[in-house]
Length: 461
Image (cartoon, rainbow, N blue to C red; front, top):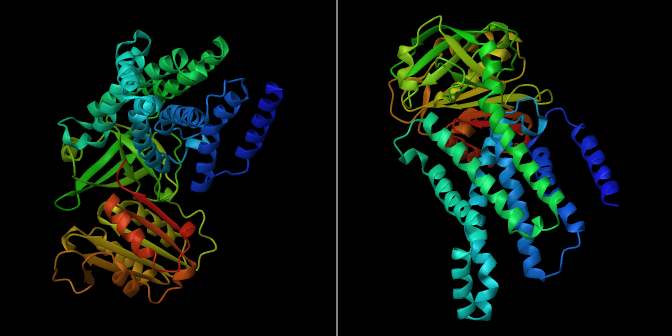
């Protein structure tokens, strides 16, 4: 009976994942929920003792959170060829969001387990706490609990620690690998779902091993592949006082779509952890060369002047879903760039110019000062040569240039810039900092634009 049910579920799942070539956010959520819930369905078939509604709900939540913890590893593994995990921008957002919920739940896990004792009597609760702390069989769970609380806080407040990104990532990954191993040990030795014999426990350890295998792949096999297909640095030049233009050349067949991004490393070998995401500013026609716009914001970007033309550059990608592939039915295209978010937006605009785009195209481009604006001459050229293209510059600080809107990209700014386009049938492409993207998306809610027609990326992971 169990094997027949398993076969039917696997067959349905196989058919389910073949229906879409490019997963949407809703599609990804359905698949993630399916993976999280299906282990509970299998274990619910087993003859567990009915210990009441509270224990049943708690057992369900424990299992859901345990499987969610295991999914954290493939979510962060940058698996370009796996459809479920190919939307790396979306995956990283869910990785952070799920991590907070997992950390909060497991932090409360001991209290939830002991809560019924508290209703019985204070003495029973005190005795249970003492037994939990001193029981040898609970030691792995206690260590995992302490480590999880510490590592979740370490992840949330990582910018407060004087660590480079590479060192933080190594500690972050190693810590959660240890937590998963300890948690799996705990659930197979103490947890109710690990008490059905060696086969169930072996399944738990297999799931744990598969999760950790994604990390092993990212640290061993992937760098080996990237080393064999290293790019070459062509040039790096200062665009203004805090922005760089970087150009690299591919040594092998490399394809991408305008609007996508890659992870770059300029270290001596591909096995270093110092990879950083940068949007591609060029178009596929420029291959084998790719260009990037990089703003000096951290330790790595402040060292760009040390790069030497001819050195190897390791490229992992492309990733991202903010492309022009799905806007064929739109009557206009709206491009919104905040700060260094111009990088993927200029790539999209260049592609539209190359294809002689006949539809109205509007660019709203903001920066702190007008002196930080990039590609101004190119944008002026597009206004003269594209059929229906206009630029609206937005500056927070006053400027002597007459062609700008002072302030932020808010509702008023959007209304002024988009009054001559069919907004309700437009596609919107938005890129900028997390705060800028959040505020602009909020302002767009006042416009009759379907959420499915708004594509965005925020410059943070």
